[in-house]
Length: 400
Ligand code: NI
Image 1: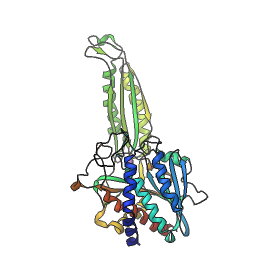
Image 2: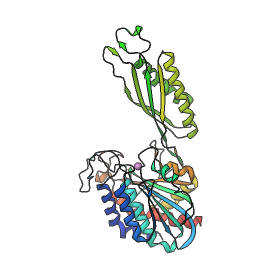
Image 3: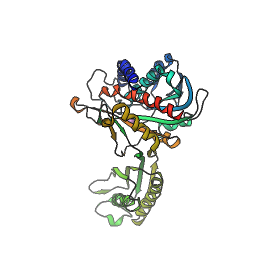
Image 4: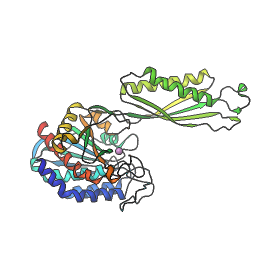
């Protein structure tokens, strides 16, 4: 079976590269993935898949029915690009100024199309159905995943049962092409944006004693006090990070401003701690300000939940990777404090989110995600589509 999938992957390799480059050349931001969705639709319809468009605005859901009855499995790719101006100079560089596929979603989409083509050719051996999700807006809160779930992509429909398990993959530039990374249980963080406005009293910097409160000094106390929320209240076994990345207070050398504004990110690997921390931070912000005669408020823009990989499907992917790329090419991942909206699916269904190596130092492909020179070693696409097809085929025989 593996040899057959590998040779199908080789057969379609050039097509997958062409798809990836077409998408890379025309990056579209969250919820504007119109041409990308059209390309997905155009590629899948001739295969006879049940293709539905306009799910969560620009999303596409396609179902392949296997020759044998069985459960449904869900495979997902994200389609959106980032507001970054690309600085690469290959011939399929972004044609849309200020937009770029700098997180590999072009590769995810092309790879999943490749998987669909491979599975379509092997559908006589498929015991169940595969639901392919081409999801918009991974990069923008609340996440296309949440929107698609609200439109029922995890439910039964007239072509297939509700998905029993969900799989997604993401490129990883510091993992060499050809390798696959897995991690069981807590893997990626929740990410919430925090905004604090401190209101004091502005005036002459030479006479602070005449003012009710110096917003800059109060903001400084708040920054320090917030770190003690993490160090004194977070359970020691829960990784959690708070970073203030922005402090705006527009006074002058001789002017104390009336207000100060703080912005930052709060990340955690545990949902209970996450929401408790919001309350504690609100209290610390309000009372620290009050202690100094100022007023302050914390607003939290709630982002994606922490991403939890279910142990059993993760073990399954690890075993599949051993079989497909070999034990020496299967890597145990560290926790990663970025966030990912695939977490929404994993709150509803068992599954796992794994990584596909796309780096290559010898070729100079070393730039990080979300940077203007990011790219992938396309040799990764000799592995990714076939591996996902293998995962689906072998998993459906287990669940069925
Ligand atoms: Ni991404």
